[in-house]
Image (cartoon, rainbow, N blue to C red; front, side, top):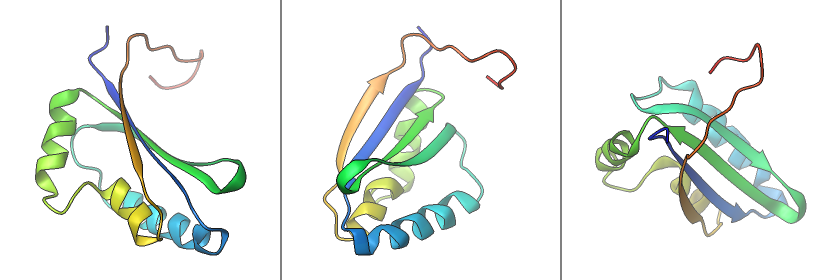
Length: 104
């Protein structure tokens, strides 16, 4: 068991708001990362389905980030700002594997 957790915030975004979402996410990740997140990605799928997945060092790091944003964490807020209704999933990482040559 790694102790890491993965948050996945997902929503369906209207086609005319997708560029706004991408721009807002780029702006967010251009800022210095707080302690705790290992990586984060904005992912797009079919039919307007979008996800922000963030891997956290541990649950304490995730809880600290949540406490730092009394108005709510950034990922759900980005979706709400483009008129989408976010859904959140929290997953415990049980096994972690990295391809040879990739940073862990």
